Length: 163
Image 1 (cartoon, rainbow, N blue to C red):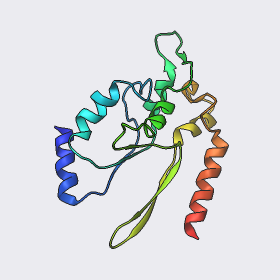
Image 2: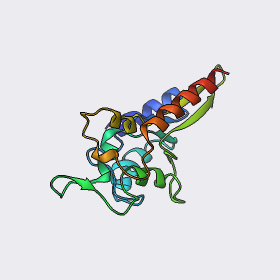
Image 3: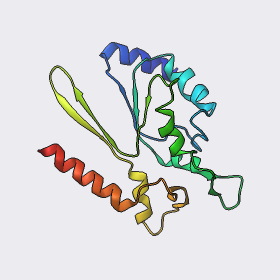
């Protein structure tokens, strides 16, 4: 019902795209770029209702795909390519029709008839590691940007946008 409502609304307002704001695969993310959840949780539900591009960002539940919850305590999965990497990798599959999450951070410039806007997609989850009380095991790994790099990217991007 939600997908059908989204499709009807998108068509009635002439939506150009969907801005998907994280927690894309609740509760524990996806395990690969070809995980069956792409079909059952995304394409069969939302892909049938709208052919729009889904510009996506990461949330904490997407990062939970990085962990193996069958272990106690949960531990990082090996090899790489699971969780957030899987969501980014899916963007580049030839079979992908409408998912877009090319990197932890990216920008999207939208030119509409009456306005232009720069959408800044920022992976704030990686910055969680700056909080000493945060349970940040899911955010550790070789492909997760350092919090300082994340904040520098955001500052540079916003400063460049003002020029």
